[in-house]
Image (cartoon, rainbow, N blue to C red; front, side):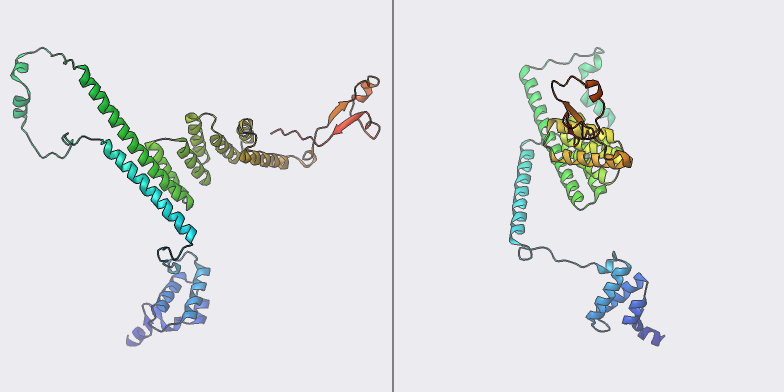
Length: 345
């Protein structure tokens, strides 16, 4: 027992701390134990052996937690001057926007401080006392129902103003919450965590729907290959803002992935009709044409139409010239433009 405990530390025998054994070992878990033992320095400090063990473990399991390294927090000295100044300016802008939103919420409180709380009251009143105190004697004796009193116009105006202020405060709270969820979704999208991004965008839409949030959610669903859900988001965008260019481009991309090339080309044509210089639509249209041509049979891939322009005054022999010309005899009579391709998607 003593010899086995001396030659083994934390489940790793000393004989395993060797180049030959590490090179032949194929158990990633055991290599992690060897690496921890080498990093502890209990058997000595061997930097080359540690590097060799890390490289071999990386080949077996690149995502091993033993290979993770703790990076210190970024400071002004560790970053370039331009990048640090950009971070500082963005933080100042965010701080100012947060202070403005908090000040606006304080100016329009949702609940009145003088109003009693809805829940949490520890007071208890028996039912018999409630009936005797709350119901006046006059109402107990009378069986007729009393008409509601008519309030003066000033009281009605005050009520409308209070309701308007409450609605404004609720709208500001909704906007703040929706923007917060959208920012979280954008951060997740940048890190390519599309599941988390789609969940954050969905929460933002449930609070306050907008075209921009629907577009971001559609892009996340496209990256997740959820074509039908992305199509639903595009339809919502077009319902909120009919003819939106980004919605049409996004829906064209979904149609393209679903194999509906005709529907995709219609959306692209709709975008190019309003914006002929739209770069995204032009590139998508040209790529769609190339894919369509590549799907045709080889004998039809270079098919082109010829446009014939007849010279004025050549009325003789028109019946023979209406046929397709062959050879060099037809060249003086007609001008041939063979480079005109008709895109029919």
